[in-house]
Length: 294
Image (tube, rainbow, N blue to C red; front, side):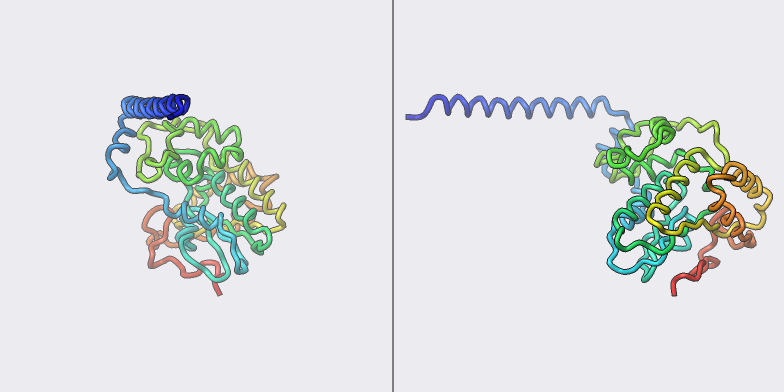
């Protein structure tokens, strides 16, 4: 004889599963109806744009790699540094996490922290940061959604957020959507404007606080940390001098040991060697700018 309790339990479980399924479908329908139009388009159109930031994702991958071979020099930097030592390339005795300016110095710190923690037993002899002078003034801007929020998931990296960084992140429209799976695989960026950072200077608050953290973590791991300039157009010398004044003034105490050698390293190249205001033409890009590949 069939146990009535078992039958009732089966019916109850079936009804509960059906009820949960209905609720899930209802919530999904409600989500689709209430989504902002731009995001709705992404959900319903898989061909929406191309995913940008491949160089950043490559840098994140390097930062989370535990290297078996000896890495003598770790290269970091913005897109001008990336042009010299791409993070996508494989090298014999160096590793590169150079990517772009849009990740801000906060993103650079995240990369460095990842790398050092994953390679405690195989630390590089030296960290070299390559960047154009304008990178020091960078803050969270219109590119942050694509190049910062997507490669550095909020849930993973929020413990490393400063108060200033978090306030800027929250100013990005729909910042909370950046790590949704269907957003991760699209080229979506909010079209709404991000409020400008009114205190923007050539050495931003965000750069200062995270550059200090980069310096501190390098010291903690007893790895030498240097900053060098990438080539600068010779027709921008007056403009660059304004940048350098801020670097000298704001970083005069805590960061002088990094910024003074950086300023001295600046070299001006003929403007006809550049295809824009900061990047060298491919034909003018040195194969080994620092002479470190041999």
